[in-house]
Image (cartoon, rainbow, N blue to C red; front, side, top):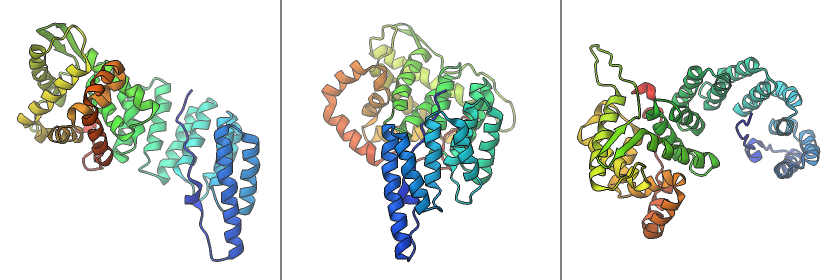
Length: 364
């Protein structure tokens, strides 16, 4: 099973120098060995990397990162039992990190012991209660066992405790885009792309979102279309009654689609141009109807900001570009200056997500 890519921790952040010259020399020399070992790991030279890491450990035995890197080598060599042996000692230390529990749990899962993996992640949460990584991994274990509702629950809890951690949104985007409740998939997926902009997962999500929009907006003729983002029609009648978010979203999306069908020649399939035009109309109608008061949404607020800056078209072409690279290329050739201006602004003005304003299906 292709699991998360374990990021090599920057060694320098774990070095604590003291006032003794000899100790400084030892720690600095250990750091040199450690840095060289990381380079060797990246090149697949594991035997030599292990030798350097053992040297670093002897020079700086209190630093937890060197034994972690040793365990990581065993992990990427698929020697999970050795990785477990190393990590079980490390997770008992006071200076343990989230990554230790993550790597240990993954190792147990990959030797076919998912229950032990879940136990490890739960122990990690006892020390790091706001760890999006622990909820991510719990969700992946349950997803692999086809316990999809439980997986979703873990990932959404991960969004709650760590709203700027991208990976939980990635998995939520995937699972909902491939369900009848595509509405949550396109929202979680787009937030993921804002948090993780330049990776292979970003490419994959861009493609998925484009295909999801095409499936969710079913064009039967130049004047007829259906919006299929959600099949949920349940209304709870209570003293706090309000129309479900999904229904309002569908109604406003239908309103946004109508002028696009009238103004553009839409032949069965949506293009990037069509999706941009629909999303442009959607945000305008959403705020005109004052739905933002009942359904606060950090992503829609960001869309509104992009519209006000005249960057929304460039943004829409950016986040869906991998769905139709040819169309994006043609558009970019004609709008290069505008896109470059947007990109410069976008790099300096990311979406601002906090524990107060984060988006979750459960808040709607």
